[in-house]
Length: 286
Ligand code: SF4
Image (cartoon, rainbow, N blue to C red; front, top):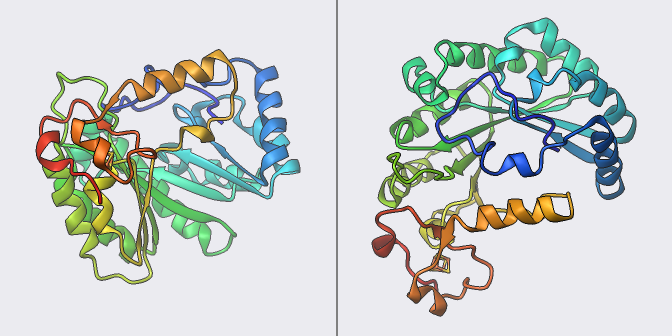
């Protein structure tokens, strides 16, 4: 459930203005209706934004959710969790799964991506507070990162260091390339970064590769790396807004002629059309 588009970061690749505006809850009535809708299908709800922790009605939402869901996940940049009192209140209100978005442990790299000086330090403090809280509370922690030209070289190092702190679950997501004028990481850069990740020697780690052209990452899967394609069907709103969202999202993708001979053709949305080196790296899967 997307509760708000407001955010305390200004990430370079944020999709909220282009995509999420179509699926954000527009009113309290809509929030209540959506909670009911999710509760009919699932015992877990995921609350997100924008940045969900800056949404003023978050604790009101949590108070309803805790009565109907077994699991409540918060996707957040974790900055507000730098205050232990705030984190305690979230956990006390029923949140028991936390997915924190961080792009690098280097302040300079992360802050350049988020556009907010000091954001990395706050996010890291939030993660440390979560790790501390996990010692006494039943919560799970996952790290979400988006691979981009600014942080690809730092991805492995970040995962290693967070692993040593006790984090075991990661999602590495593909950047949604919204603006072809901005230099995005090309497929060669993505492949290189993910190959490095696939060579990690930690056996009890779980890494999900989210998005990315299936043919590019197919052979990188191993016992600790799973591939998850884009799941637009998880968007629960029905009607013209959801259609607009799906249409806008799919409009970002393309296929090559040779894709028609690919065994994944029917299930693959294609690759993002702004990749300059698609001709070299997109290869039909037999
Ligand atoms: S359909 Fe095209 S983009 Fe998708 S996996 Fe096959 S070759 Fe790659």
